[in-house]
Length: 161
Image 1 (cartoon, rainbow, N blue to C red):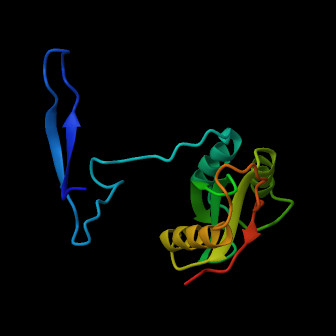
Image 2 (cartoon, one colour):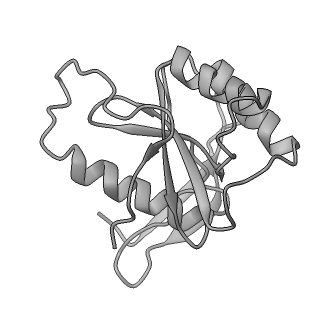
């Protein structure tokens, strides 16, 4: 482990060398903040979640009725021992007559995508609470085991402080 990371630009030709584009320094705890500035990342997901992803995009473009100002829906692919975040949105009112809710639920159910609903002050806090809940609930699951998703769409959880 070092106290700095060099982000390099690719070599322009096979004979040329790469160049340092950015130097990231460790923070006071010796940690690097992946995901900020030029060191962006995405978690890979091999599950087909295209319908759910499209529904999330549709919801972001729509002014839909929400259950409350501090209610969130954290949508993720559930691998039993690992969760891959797909999105955090204000929780939609659970009105079965509403096509948007019905389509969102159906997409999650069809693609075996999970979601937690919970109360939190912000989307970021909802995400952290969902990760904590998931981690506490799944701590004993072997990554090599074949498991069924344990959370289903709109599974209500309590925040873990």
